Length: 249
Image (tube, one colour):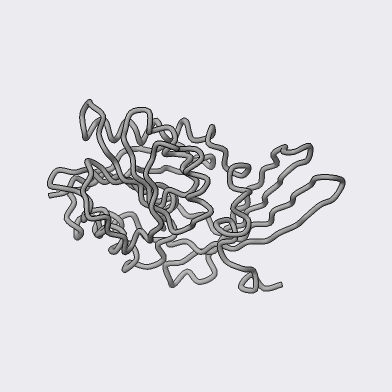
């Protein structure tokens, strides 16, 4: 089977029930500590209000709501349902981070790993413009690229097996770059679900954007942010990572 015959983004649709198994909220403790530190360093003390664009299942956000009031937006209703259960005190909205406008401003806007789904420079510009539209002067925007062109490893594989319901769930992730001349990569997932003496196999495909680090910083600056980097050493493969922190001018 050619990879382009595999349906796109099933993890956010009919297979969304797998997300808490694939990426449990407890595994976000270390990541969330970096986000919390970046927010505190730039906002100071006190209970501030933040907006998360592309909240997904709300796993990273669940470690921030103890100190911040939050509003969340996502494009997938099944993922919002996960986040509503995990973050019952958070106001949730269905919307696209490139176009949504809530008509209000916040102390901070964050975009966690959902920013990886911005496939072009125009997509990134639109997401950054949405962040800027929801901040007043001096407001803080924090995001982080999963990969940048300088650190992307073509042909990498990851896998994990987790127990559930008397069975097990295994995912195999293959990440590659079909066309190095463009700004997109592809990740193919195989999900192996074992329960009740039977094995169910599903496949899923996701497209991600890939840009040089300077592109991220340049487009944030164009959106009206003074940009700084903060080390974000959370990757399992040992590659460097950064939180990009923008203060609205």
